[in-house]
Length: 258
Image (cartoon, rainbow, N blue to C red):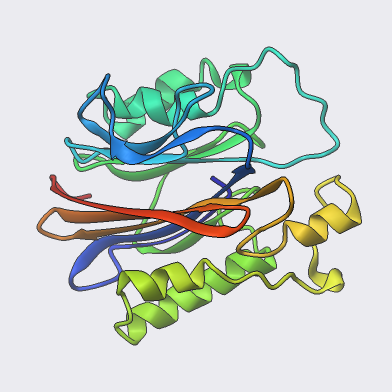
């Protein structure tokens, strides 16, 4: 998962409005949004290679999403654990977000650089990164963005989705199509606004768009999660391949709300 925008307790009907794109190499196999056979409490897409997930929810109302932190100047070890474990392990437990994150602090260096967003109905939403000693950090009501730098780092695409999500809330345009539309913009950022994350300028330019599509790498899924204050939660996942849309799945569940 590489781009997430979310509004937390900013709307009279919804406790959480979340829109997200997962960017990945097309050859990496993954399962579509579904309840997992080996843990039927978890509703998420799934990476077939490492059996983790980029974003999911469970029937207890726990929510988790992860992005990698991009630093092309680093050369990470090849024996690091998959970041998809971070979300899978949380969704598989009954732990509160603060308790899980305190335990994770002891293991954080076993993973590549990451940003983790998790929440439980009892504790609310938390952000944690194993870079720059950031977190665990409880989140207050507001509109947030998370990509491949720390929370709310003002990259152009992050600013854009936060602004558009704010406008969608103000204009009551919270239907799934409109929210997917926010995450479908292929326009790249001007060269003068590109971040410097230690990768080549052409690749930095390519990755600056909200929706990415190259020969080998791109946006594989857009997820929209709408959770009402009464706990009714709708999760929609639109999946893509190199040619475009391939499948859409929607599930609705009732859980204790965040």
